[in-house]
Length: 293
Image 1 (cartoon, rainbow, N blue to C red):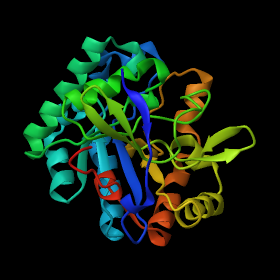
Image 2: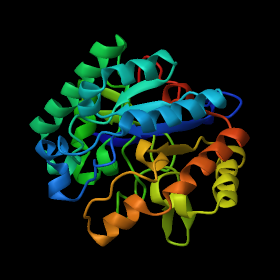
Image 3: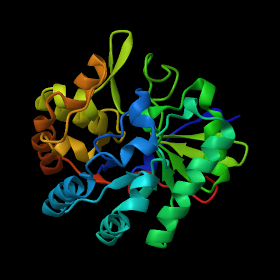
Image 4: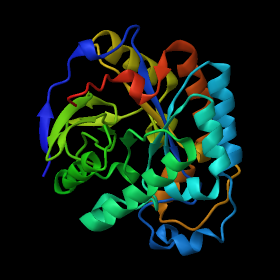
């Protein structure tokens, strides 16, 4: 089982300070926590909107001359290989989001390894470039799934971005900034979700529903504090469907419906504001992964 932690030193950050911009490349119906929408046989019934929505993101990134890490679902890569080629040819990093968008605690070790390897193989066959990183659906590395880090390193990956230092979604004991973790197969980097301390809890604000709810001035000021006071990089994440306020509605539990549909129109202006006022890049450029890592 993987053991944590090995400290992160500020000298591993390149100057000027670069924050990580990441895209979870999935379609609008890839929603965790509902059985019907985690069944791949059901997905063929849904309209595909991932290419048009991803092109909106690519257009913004061109406008602001910014590169990002795209955590690509293997299922999407299989269906839309030309989209993955376009992303790669424009200089963005291609990493994996697994193949079937299943949370790690829903899988056995063998199932997880098979799912991850399948996604890596198809991405590398499309780009001709080694995949370095992984992000679990719904940030699903917890204390009881730390074994996944061993398997990621076994498969040749250099970093993970699946941990959340929160009580509900993750573990408060997880570190808030990038650090290395020992596994059975060597060290692997972890780049956790960025949070800010609030009383007894950490609060996310840099992606998904928290980014869409939080005032822009708050997001910008907290990221600047992390950069220039804590001298650490932040991590922002987005989904293509958050740039599409017309994407179809499906029946979801109230909490999931709110998380998925609320205030999606706020995503684009907030991301454009951050790209205008701060420096971003792919994860591979934010942390220096040395040979012994």
